[in-house]
Image (cartoon, rainbow, N blue to C red; front, side, top):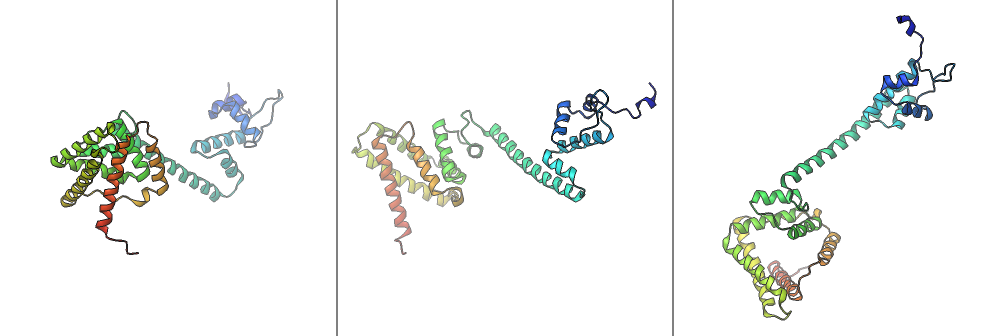
Length: 279
């Protein structure tokens, strides 16, 4: 075939699809929505594509590859102002940058999960990383769930403070031994009556132990970080308490009473240290 045989010979829709890597169905759709003018038809009634339609399809292909919507492409095609097209592309670049940042954050979260994640999948990477950095064993699933809830209601800073407190106890065997003893005493209350004298004893000794730990942390300069007020709100704390109250395994009446008395004692001690309200 001579080169002159190609002159003035329009392409069929199949040939255009081959040239542009678009499907015939996509090309027809562009005609239907008016994005590309319908080409003339030959004697057999088939579409005959010339340079104008082909280059429009190639241009659309390039714009869609950049991420522009068909509506934005239509807008760009109808304008004669190059600056308007530049504005569309600038906005698209902003959107893509935002998506890129979200993807970066997601990949960072995945990387943290891969490095610090546990088999339960409920421990947040930041807290797991803090345990690893402190050389602490990852707690059991139930404790992880409580930590996750605490983080959701009180913020990450509060949970990291808890990890720091656990790490501090590892440096003080005397305080750690007392903490273990009190935990065993609390477990004993599961089968105790609510008026068992061990209820009040636990509350008193736990309050004294808490005060000792806080004093030791202050002396060592290892006080936990102050919680960020922006990380928690009253409604969230209330919902968290409600969620804890809906736990499948509930503390016994004696354990619940022991915790109430402990909180009463610690709050009273805090009020005494802060002095009377002068307002």
